[in-house]
Length: 286
Image (cartoon, rainbow, N blue to C red):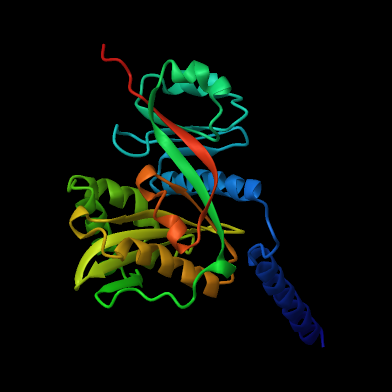
């Protein structure tokens, strides 16, 4: 009798746990403002790179007023992010002043950024974009010679690494990319990040990455080798990951578009919601 009662209690607890997990995992389905989409775009940037940094074994913090990842080399995630209220920014600059780093400011606010503009080298402006996935064109079809697929094997993951390095024309980058992303390859069964490959006429030439946050998904690393651009692969690499996100129950997507992508993403439904100013700091040689 006692054993039967214990089984009932355990079963009830199991049902409660599953229900709680399902409730917590349900992405936001409410209407959201343009400002909220911008906040989510900034949030995705912070979450993604903190996750990547920690996965690579680097020191990574994502605090209320700032976020940073410290990588051991000049190339890559040697990186600082300052939130818009700029609290703790001086302390972070002092901590990283002898290292090369990148700074992402949350908005285009020159009054607050003036002191940093005078000591940093401006790179460019990222445009934050958002979309209601209910508006995603479900009838979209890629060109017959274009194919996109989700990376589900470690073998395809290796192709993703190679393609990322190839499209940047930097073979030395492969090992560093593995350091950053190996914690998320398919055999690790980490669902926070999924990878996509794309090909033209059977030749793999593009990549995309989809980050899954609590309320939204965000595209990263969408790119095509220079020899294969303007043939529809970039659009397909943006579209098909988002179609998978719809199947997973997501309604909202955000991203940070670099200048060469600002004109591409609106073609599949993205709208501008804000901006992020990007600066570089390179320490003076002694």
